[in-house]
Amino acid sequence: MKNPLSIIGFKLKNLIKYIMAFKDIFKDNNDYNEKTIIGFISFLMMVIAMAVDLVTGYLGKELVLNEYIFNAFLYTTLGSFGIAGLEKFAPKKKDSDSSEQ
Image (tube, rainbow, N blue to C red):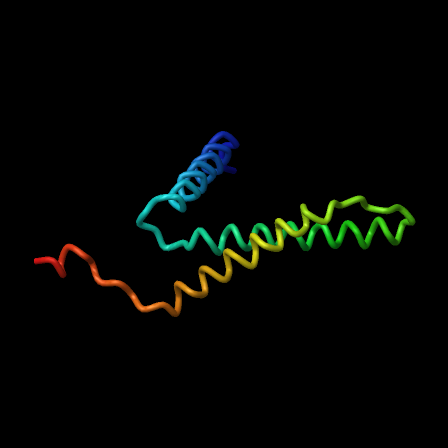
């Protein structure tokens, strides 16, 4: 049987590793597209708001959600996915340092 402290230590090391990996998202050189992450989070918030509205409507209560809040999530989602999509199909710019020399 394994020592419980070693199991906790292993899980703590993995948690620290994931936290450090989350910080890597915000570096300049990474494999993640920050715009799509923000767009997905915004889309997820819109879906949660709609699901809560459906559930509260089914229960007979009205969910008071200001239209401008929902529209802010909508514009954030469309803008971030639109910019990320344009970047994917836009021609790549060459490094300005190599063209000057």
